[in-house]
Figure 1 (cartoon, rainbow, N blue to C red):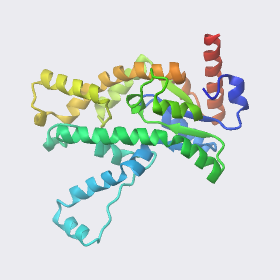
Figure 2: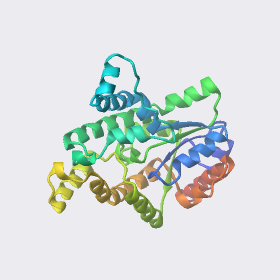
Figure 3: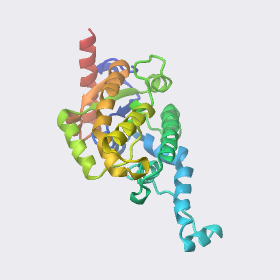
Figure 4: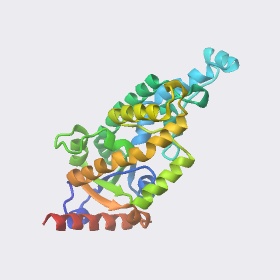
Length: 290
């Protein structure tokens, strides 16, 4: 790790961290607090949705618009422009494009198309993560930001191998930033499941996990692929995805960084609070290793 002790962290002229963990546990909230306190905020999901999948997202909007005669005529004559308005706080264009598999009449995608978009997201997420050191340098050289936070997506653990000491993504990140897992409790997990059940959203899944989940759901529900309720499938899959991701996050923290609890993160209200929390976590890790 680039900081091994509380003293190294406190004395560092440049503080650089990657926050990772399940969506909904405070990564973006903490990143916003740090940004307001003078840190550079790099959002991996925003980078995915602009640099790497922006064209595909916009083309999907245009494809739908072409089905409307008035919009089709305007598009063909370059009379209107359709673009994604993705922001750090509104990633809906990205999640809408990623979609959910199943019944087209309920907004679902054919499973092969869904898998194609999943593969696009995987490549884009890896590229956006590997871009992080470039933005560390860019933030300092162009804008003078000495401190940097990378707000990673919840699916980071799906595109890395935390058990491999030569993992290409984690190797790059750990040379330049401190990896910090925001660990949720069982109560947090139950709350995330309740929230997801009310508003199910598209997610990226590791290919092997997705195929196992899809086949198990088809078998359990007795549905044909084109008759699957898209929301029902992602609801059914969500708790399984959380359980699948938890040990991968834990291995990332154990082998490549450190962890803090979501409860402690919830009490952070200033960059100074965050700095103290990281210092304490480094001290705990050092004492366990001693």
